[in-house]
Image 1 (cartoon, one colour):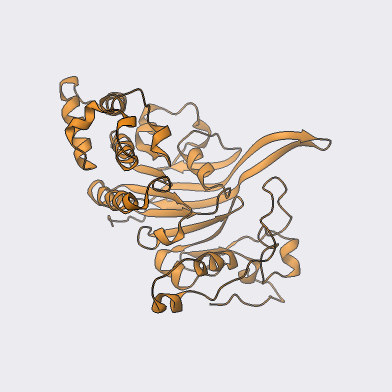
Image 2: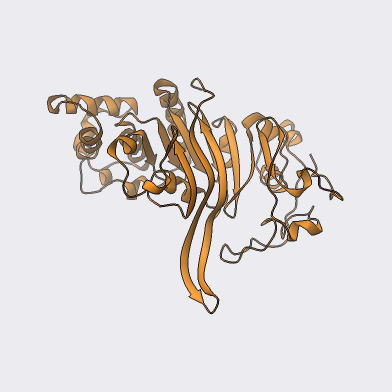
Length: 339
């Protein structure tokens, strides 16, 4: 891992992103994709943002890079509020924040050569002389372990893993500070996923990059992320460093996820929390129930859970959880989550 600084490079505060999908007699109908999310990413670290499909994690990614404009809230990048600059970001800011999308087949222009794909960000975001562009493009390909003759190929002529390597090279071309990885391996064969992950980790050490890693694969984060944040229906449930997260998960939803992670040995099975059995179904993001959004599925729910949405509480230094079981000053707590 690169050297992690105490400086927070990305600071998100009470971020909301709602999408209007229609209206009824009561007025507009919204999907609350992101509903009051706050977290920070330190310079040089990898923060894993984990959640099921529809949890809002990719919406956060697209809002950070400027594809979406927030409904409300603050996004600070190196101390500058960039949230409302979605369509008017200066090139200097776009240079600093890059993204690698989930599907390289759709994120790369099939009608362009790899040379054309890599040339554009170099010309837009760097002062590389024209005579040096090809040398710089070859250098980028070498960083992702692709030969120089790939400059003359087009995306349809290469494999899925190679396409993603090109997408990574394109993201690195401006020499960014923050790279948002939106499930960069989920669309690839298992045989090439490990190669992509290892290369991303090598590049992070080499270039001192900061990663916001979006994924639904919790087991992947054990050896990749410095810290992990869990999302459920547009909200953060729990944030902790990777070791603490897997050794002592606190939120019932987090326990449910970790207890479901497949393991190989009996020793690994013993380290997992006891299985938390989910009851009920996932609510519609259009009609999220009042109170805690997880209470319909939680085996430890209390009366307050269906009435009051819990706030994030720091249980231990760096370990925060949004659950009434750990809310300060609460009386008549339900059964403690099993470890």
